[in-house]
Image (cartoon, rainbow, N blue to C red):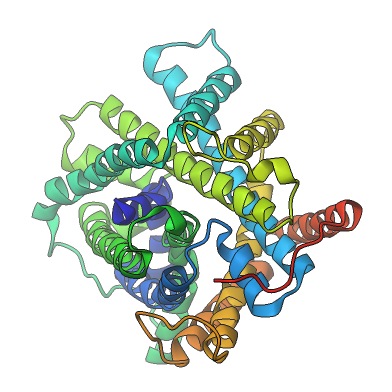
Length: 425
């Protein structure tokens, strides 16, 4: 269940459009970008697996950073940065669900925003019901969205071998080829983001020391296999130049590989894929808010648990209200891009936290002891991606990220939460 939770969080709807953008950078060798991105993501993924096994707490990144450095302000910024990433993902997903549901069922008279708000309310009820129910729905969605990718692979497999999988957009030497692969991996790295969500549910799984590492590594392995097969299939069915310019690349691939299949099938798959990502972020965000409140970094009522369902019901309500406000604001693309920058910063801090905690004799030992090169490599990869993303992306995203960071610090200064010292494991 935990592996499906992590896999569903990584698959999402991103891969359905990401493969086209990566093909524009690497041509037929787009698969190489996924290989390099997997290596970079696995470094931080292993760090998260080790930390989740040692510290199974709902506070996730905020708890671990506070444990490593004992700085409430830093923990506050880290926690709310991760929550912000979840909220923007939920808001984006709900809008996409609203538009697709309206199109699929011919509900043009109903505003997409109204459908999105109803959808968010249904998610809130599901998350309030409990983690078991949420994970079952997640498992169904994951099977459907993974099934959509498997369909592409099955119907496109007959095209394998028809294209040059080493063809690059330009004729360059080996050194420049390496730079191209790195540029492509900056794009494809974001297809692996989502593995970090498993950390916030570690407290609610059985035997976290065994379950968290296995579940997270299985999820990342499954995503890697699917991404590699999808990238090879996509450029085999549709020439990479055409694929790079397609707004819905996998839709073009399916239209050519299986022209008899109704377009509505992929619309349904897209709805489940986006719905799953929103659900996972709802679960993650509510647990993180609950954990931060338990650390006294957020108002006390958010740390309360429902007497019957044993879920953080006030945290669930808070997540719904804020997500509904964000959905109503309209275009949130820049906000989403900015939270990605904040999330990469969190990854750097988590790798550094692992180095700090591993050298503290009083800390629990990890069931999967990692050499120091793993968190060091993870910090370097994420730091490089942070710089590249901030330098090559739209200048608005870094400015929005700086604005979000400032707003979080101002909120901290106004509320003045007083967290205790270094918490016990």
